[in-house]
Amino acid sequence: MLQDGKLYIGTSRKPDDTNNKPEYLELKFGNRHGLVTGATGTGKTVTLQILAEGFSNAGVPVFCADVKGDLSGIGAMGEPKDFLQKRADQIGLTPYDFQEFPVIFWDLYGEKGHRVRTTMSEMGPLLLSRLMNATDAQEGVINIAFKIADQGGLPLLDLKDFQALLNYMGENATALSNQFGFISKASVGSIQRELLILEQQGAEQFFGEPALKISDIMRTTNDGRGAISVLAADKLMMNPRLYGTFLLWMLSELFEVLPEVGDPEKPKLVFFFDEAHLLFNDAPKVLLERIEQVVRLIRSKGVGVYFVTQNPLDVPETVLAQLGNRVQHALRAYTPREQKAVKTAADTFRPNPDFDCATVITNLGTGEALVSTLEGKGAPSMVERTLIRPPASRLGPITEAERKQIMGVSPVAGLYDEDFDRESAYEILMARAKKAADAAAAQEQAEQPAEQPSGGSRWTLPGFGDDEQAAPSAPKQAKPRAGYQRETVAEAAMKSVARTVASSLGRALVRGILGSLRR
Ligand SMILES: Nc1ncnc2c1ncn2[C@@H]1O[C@H](COP(=O)(O)OP(=O)(O)O)[C@@H](O)[C@H]1O
Ligand SMILES: [Mg+2]
Image (cartoon, rainbow, N blue to C red):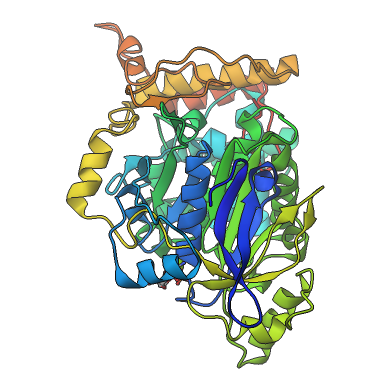
């Protein structure tokens, strides 16, 4: 059933309900993105699970968010269950083997996975404005703040640094306005209050060092399987804007860090965006355009982006048009909006003369879907009514004990779990920002893969860009010498801003499409 270069999704049905043929996703089109849609309980998460399994077995690392906690079972061996065996028999999946997958758990809050952090500098003005749901006036001030910091080569570590910078801007609004454009004191004040709210919501845990290295989500095991990074998102979902912004930041980082590879024989990474409507919901037009642009361009970096959402109307048309591989589970069609969704979903498929898409979409069973993938020279295959295969890993959550065990042997165990103290974190960020500025200035990307130490004997680690920071020994080297009292980051920030404004010295940082630092 498994074939080279292809990932088995399930088996399609003939009109008389007998098996038609196996349906595959071709790995060489894995970077041409995808869409999994359907109402609640129709099988989206299981489809995500079997796709992630297939990519992992093909050696492709996967990143996905676990919105309800029920995807974590992918790290555990599947268990024989009657209904799963029945599905396997029905579609001719023999033998139906169980497997556990190499999983790395991540969590912004550090509870159900290794910590994920970034710095203010690396997030950039566009995503920060989105995170704060900033008004136009606030966004203007945020842009100026980053302009001041970037021109001075002044990295911003966390919310406190940003507060310090805003204080400085408020106090020197008139002088700075002459140089950078109008700074409204009222807007500065309102941003500062918003930052406090963000802090209370737990966002400050997300800003700091050690920042996530993209290479850590691109690991493979020594037996050639791709790591599946699972982001615990149940708590995160309570702050939907942080969830959406975080995933956009990841996408942005991938885009800025990864080298161009054209169309590889299989993706370098596959990125699943569950609850994708949270990305697009009332996002400003500029952001939507940038997302559309990044989705289009990231393909040539070998990254496949798969959106998972209830309703195809959740995804803007310009993005929808780029999603080549499609799994459409059942939709309801009671309300006019639902009927429109069914029609949209049906119209995007290459029709099959055997059935009417719109009718079938409302009649699909659980774990059944309309499937169309790219084939041949990259054209969509004729849509087929398909029974999705059962997962090889466990259906449902793993236990907390199992999670602890997996985290304990993870290749990143110990690398992200502790915060760096502020001074050393600041130095590390300074060094990285300088490197980014140098690289941007040189206008070329270092593409030679450096030899990287792997975290455990079971794992390998890709080497590219921006990896000089070899946590966790780094903060030790950066410890201040005895007797030498270092100025606080905020003090340093203020002085540096003052210097910048006074003399325009320093190295400018350059930002990419979604506002991350260019590397
Ligand atoms: N491919 C499948 N094979 C067997 N059972 C499935 C399959 N897909 C879904 N199911 C069953 O349906 C349930 C709900 O699926 P799920 O993927 O959680 O739905 P959704 O994410 O769309 O809400 C699963 O717990 C499982 O029992
Ligand atoms: Mg689900």
